[in-house]
Image 1 (cartoon, rainbow, N blue to C red):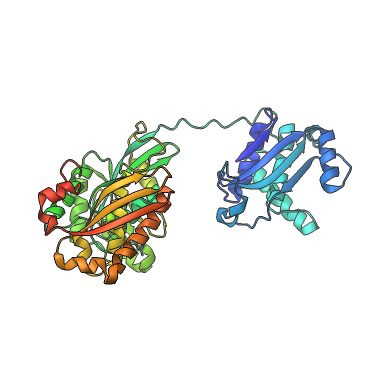
Image 2: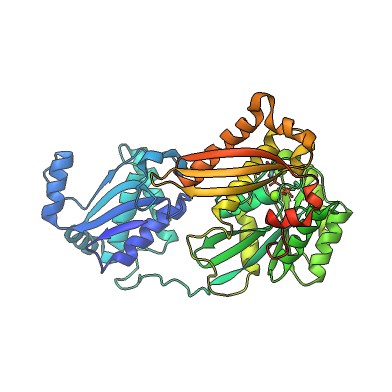
Length: 467
Ligand SMILES: Nc1nc2c(ncn2[C@@H]2O[C@H](COP(=O)(O)OP(=O)(O)OP(=O)(O)O)[C@@H](O)[C@H]2O)c(=O)[nH]1
Ligand SMILES: [Mg+2]
């Protein structure tokens, strides 16, 4: 990122030089920021006097704000980030225009080349290079020449040769991508990583997700609308049937399918059949081989090899959704397959689900994570009150519904310890998400075999209008 002051004529070469240095050091241009100004002889002399106690005109001055450690890592400088731009401020560079003009004549090349040279020199200073002795000087000069050569600011470049690079007119893409796979494969972890926000709850218990949930990712020239779905399984009750119908409905109208495989378990016949079915109905299928952080390279290679036999796959990407490894590569593969289209969600909206739904899911997540055994599968959460008081405090009252009388004491715990724990963890998450103080009241209620009771299912929001 470059903040350029009073410069129009040589803006293009300055940007070319700065970006050349960024690229050389693998610094994303959004991650770092520099200020550059072309100034007069008087101004540079004054700066030189004030800052370095040298009362003389010079060609270039640079003032680093940090001791940069190379390779540059954005996360190493949390307190040096400019809150407005989100970039790490590297420092300032001042070039004396008059001096640059004189030196250009002296060396017999254009002013453009001279300014490009001086800016590159200043940039290297900001990154810690110096010419204190001959060895250091030689190192810096070599690097300087290499970068200038790479970006085409050569000795024979003429004024007017380097012009602003116009961005290509890339068409905007927008489309839906459903995330499917067996229970516990890591679909919800993946959608959260892709969106950069928690849109879906996660637990190590299979069948955590019960509804399809939308999460939006915005790129510079694209919007991808991901849809998380319940894990594919043979339903044993009406809730299970609803869950599988919500998968079918998520598939309608999607352009791309990410099929997630748990590399610990490998791809079995059911996975292969599922993938072939989606390819067969004309979906563009990308397979994500997940949890590679937890298995050997040989195991991953075996799965990749196995998948080469499946016809019609657009891509197979090994990933770790949990560690966010290769997630952007996966995203690029999806992006290639999306149609052109206009943005469907406003840029600041990252899910289609409201906070009432999120509150009930977060409470359910804590119950799933904290309570052992089979009981969590029979738990539903119904939020009865979600209201802000005048003083900004958020009151949430919810029922934690269990399907058998015998489960109630387990969810309550000894002296209410378990429900208190669920409530504490859920409240902390809800306060983080809403940014307000939350008063959470939970009640444990029994609704016998609610998972097979259509009326209760509908009341809990599991109905055909709301897959
Ligand atoms: N080691 C490892 N664990 C992962 C990874 N991705 C997900 N998990 C874990 O796998 C478990 C299941 O993750 P979820 O994201 O809830 O899986 P899901 O596919 O959405 O599961 P259902 O909603 O039940 O279908 C959780 O314990 C996650 O922390 C990964 O990349 N590496
Ligand atoms: Mg899930």
